Image 1 (spheres, rainbow, N blue to C red):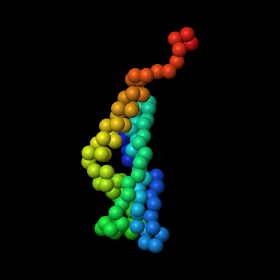
Image 2 (tube, helix red, strand yellow; image 1 turned 120 degrees about the vertical axis):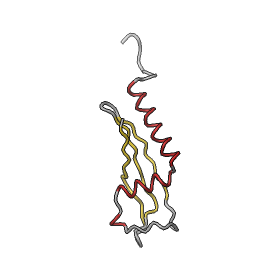
Image 3 (cartoon, one colour; image 1 turned 135 degrees about the vertical axis):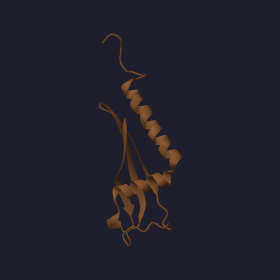
Image 4 (cartoon, one colour; image 1 turned 135 degrees about the horizontal axis):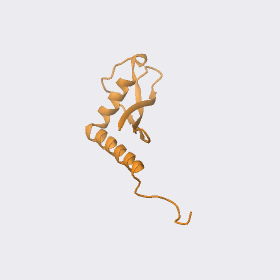
Length: 100
């Protein structure tokens, strides 16, 4: 299983480009299935984040997300993705009827 964090969008102030909200997508995948958790974090406008908007990379933004979430929450999200992926590989619930 691999887990990839990506940033599909950021909300920023037009006046100075300061990023206020970072939207993230964490995806766990194996050869057959994938699961994702989408969320967002708010950044403190009074923080020392001073990277000019046009110099922000996805790697920097993912770092902000993980730092804002904290190590425990990142671990919880990644564990949850693993549980969901395992449930696809070995389902514990199926829908259907025995006569079909």
